[in-house]
Image 1 (cartoon, rainbow, N blue to C red):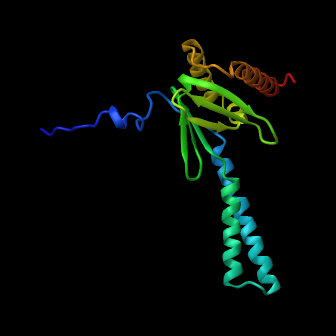
Image 2: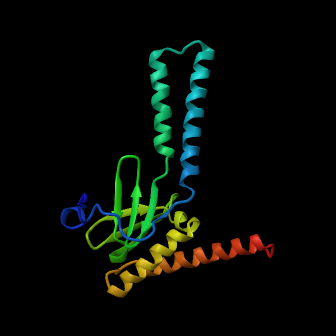
Image 3: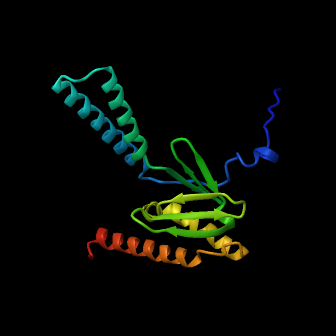
Length: 186
């Protein structure tokens, strides 16, 4: 008989352990990643073809166009967001950040051309997300809404409950609009 030992998720490894329960992912992320690859590839190919057509393509210019295509991909690649019980994770190209959504301290809005929602927890962790990700992903919004209600009950959420209610109204409006559109009642 063989014994198997598993390492428990306690101590230093508890932060690395996956939270129990289902994770809600951004269902539109794969398509947006595909678009970023397509646009960057098209830009790279167009620059190479144009340079070759003018007879000015050499190794230096090819490397420059490769760098420009890679830069376009990095800029266009959206962050990957997933929400699980008590946690929201945002993963960029090089960095992954997470915040405890069941112990939030503040939810702020960064207004401007690209509106962002900034979540900060009691441990000092902070993430920035685009609120339209929550509007487009009902499962992710339900997970975050449940956890923010826990933060409100615990008394840790000091700033941002009004903003969350405004976002909830927006999401409800979008959902109702979608239902009417699908059912033909619009």
